[in-house]
Length: 147
Image (cartoon, rainbow, N blue to C red; front, side, top):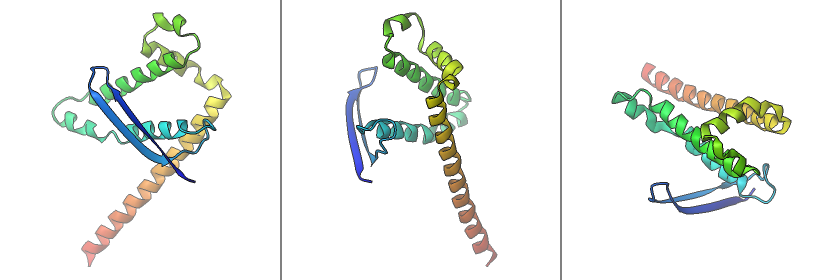
């Protein structure tokens, strides 16, 4: 498979410039025209690598994880709103209400359920791979200490 890339130059909601560059394989599973799969992979990678939440906890902000999750979910609600063919109808709902509604009904759509189940399997497989790598490293360290 050949690599794809994209670059975003935008501003955040406070008006600050933000630049995002991404390169990787676009599987073209979600959309055959390309680009969407790589975009989703990039967002998932950013979310799964949100390692900075432990530092504020050490400073006493024990709800930082919940705050980060809430901000991500709020943005997912905005995505739901923007993708809706009935945007005007959604004006009376908050982003979090849109997420709640999605969570109440997502299992009713077999295509969505199937995509999530495949993704869950990939997550479990990747977690197992990482665990095996960490165990091997730990075993190497321990065997080195025994020498």
